Image 1 (cartoon, rainbow, N blue to C red):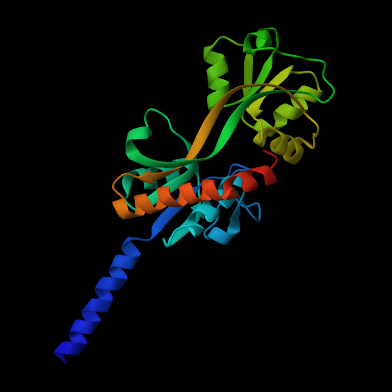
Image 2 (image 1 turned 30 degrees about the vertical axis):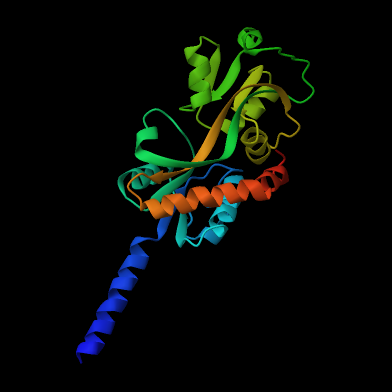
Amino acid sequence: MKRKIGLLLGLLITAGTATAEELRIYTEQYPPYNMTTNGQPFAHKTEDISGLCSDILKALMAKTDLAYTTKLRALNYGLNRAGEHPDHAIYCVSKTADREPLYDWVGPLASIKWTLFAKPGSSIELDNLEDAREYRIGGYNGDVMTSYLDEKGFDVQAISNNGLNARRLENDQIGLWVADGLAGPYLAADTANVTDLKHVLVFRETPMYLAVNKETDPKILKALHEGYRKLVESGEKEAISQAYGL
């Protein structure tokens, strides 16, 4: 009887340890970096989430022996969960001053390119950002790129539906639109049925990472960094990026 109880306790301890060490990873709906396969604003399973960063994350995790789950939720929800709980993480997020102390940063997985777009066939040419001061620029409420230009004194008009800025370009309501180099054209086609936007200028680049709660088991953190190193050295990360046109 004692032997059976001992075995049962051992199994319970093992099961508890396995559960505790499962990495719970969150992301947000931000096509084409992270997105659900069915267009819904949330997902409960890893296989229901796709996109550039998602594909890189899956390839990274395949280089480790770690157990993990992935869920797609609102950005703030994922940031709060990852910031407050060990063995929790979120991707793809930028390393800001307020976020940096809370996480261990694995990556970068990808980079956001701060891009100014013009309408298809536009004659606008810019040598540098200062050349954009003569144009009205469309932006997105709450977006870091929009805020940056606004703080620098540019003529920025932000709206709540970012993809509709492509239609504003076509209607000459704005001369330029600030958006990510990859997400902008995706949003334009998906939201406004506008294709062939003109890439006028890339003026900044922000790396994005897998941010893991700093209180996570050091063995897990080490495995993630080692998995990332293997991913880069194997050429798989570059191949995935190229598949998305980068």
